[in-house]
Length: 264
Image (cartoon, rainbow, N blue to C red; front, side):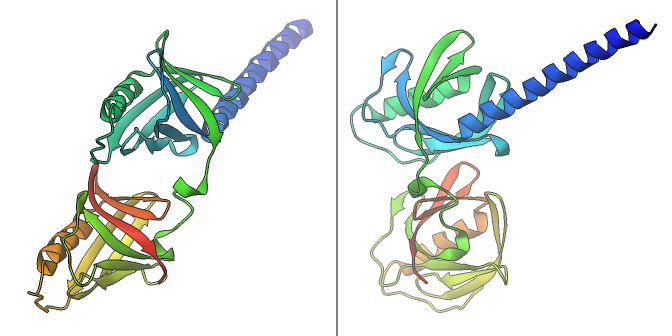
């Protein structure tokens, strides 16, 4: 009987040991994938040269971001062992006229949707659709220039650059917004009127609410049209992204407003 219990105990020890090894390996893979910027080098067996396309994976938050070749992209990622799935992918809506860029972007985003597993060898990452290799990347160090954590909403004065990727008309005063974390308030100038309101943030989601403003009419240029679209963009935004010194406000996957950082 004693020998029977010893054998059972040994089996349980082996099982728990294997489970711990699996958990350790899973954490290592997740950390490895999150530690690098993955620059695209190959799509469907075709070598890629001089492309802006890359991935950054935040496995602990089940999300990814990067550049599809022209536009910024973002979405969710699920990693289970060597299985990986990219979902909910969205991009900004800019058009790039350089030859082949938009086709590469389309091929890249479509391929990501088909990925089912990965292999990492040294500084190289390979993504597969079942047993077919469809994407290859090389790992480089993450840089602060595109690190969303390098600037916070409250760090800067954010001056409007574009509305829905359209250049602003020439106006005398550019709209801007400041965020005050201690008061949970957001306010600035619409280009014509002073405004203020409240904001709340959870990870990359945002809500700007209770906006009130002065009621001056500016008829000298296009400021009233800009003001209307600016305020609509603030009120409709539900997600934000800080890339380098740029702040983008989105409604789900649709880019609404783009700002540049300036010192307060």
